[in-house]
Image (cartoon, rainbow, N blue to C red):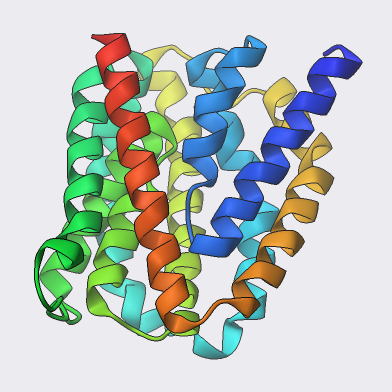
Length: 253
């Protein structure tokens, strides 16, 4: 990688990590959107994002560790393996425009819902919807490295506190990232395509410092947000991500 490309790559990592630390997600959406500009193939970008996000999740979860509740995310994590095979197949062989289009519409719809109703009704925690969110996250995460939106949508509707919401999202990401890495390794003998390669591993580790820098910046911004500001930040990122996904879907189609 040329020095100029490396600098742009690092800037992308900082931007993605800042967005995720501020709103709870968005790292994959930012990076998968920007890395192909540097000539990184979409499949490599998806796997690379899974490696790059590790320090971001670790730092963010440590900051809200007192609010972390494994029971709150257990059913969601049980649903992840159900969606993984679909996502891995789409990553290895499938077209992405349909998946991106559906994801974009759902993101915009959920983000806009509180504004079109007089009063947003709390969704509450539900084992069924947690399981469904986990399955959707597994599929989208493995296929596009954008497994965050279903998780965020579920906890966004639960209307927990700011720290509790972020802790639940980050704890969920720990499980989904581990599931995805296992799936990338396990699929190689079956599909004949090696997705997780050592050059990608080393490239991911090399840019961890940039991810850490962006994460620390995002954490400072997160602490300054009020509860209402946090929810508005999530809604804004959801809308931006939704529009982006629709644009990518139209381009791919």
